[in-house]
Amino acid sequence: MSRPAIFFDRDGVLIESIVREGKPFAATMRSEVKFIASAASVCAHFKSAGFILIMFTNQPDVARKKANAAEVLQINEMVKHELHLDGYYCCTHDDVDRCECRKPLPGMLKMGERDFDIDLTKSFVIGDRTKDMQAGKAVGATTIFIDYGYRGESEGQAVGRDFVVKSLHEVVKIITKIE
Ligand SMILES: [Mg+2]
Ligand SMILES: [Zn+2]
Image (cartoon, rainbow, N blue to C red):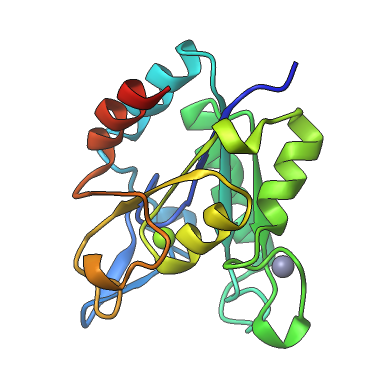
């Protein structure tokens, strides 16, 4: 039987984004990785509640040659290992590649559906960018937007969000109420 999943964006959701001039950037080296304070407890909570835990992340800096592919892979593996995730998907493409995995497209969510037998309509997508929300809505998932007040990403502009919170630990209350 299909199971529900929680799809977590990586930067700003499980690990800290590096914010410069009000805009978030991805960590590109392991030495820059700092876990969000509540990430371990939130993941443990949902794992024991029966959810499949998946990270899905855009890392276009690989295509742009601003980040090293091997280093990005090692960051992803580290996050998966530390938080006991079931899996992750990482789009390393840029817009010009016209792939199907780059958010806002829902390609990575569909891969998860297939690989882990996930019921997407009973699943949740947690992100801090509008593109995370759009990907989730495209497959009928419930979306939760973490509003850090980034430039151009504030609450009113987050298209497709079902819920808005200010920090990761608040999603526990929301999801526990719905499912
Ligand atoms: Mg993010
Ligand atoms: Zn891609």
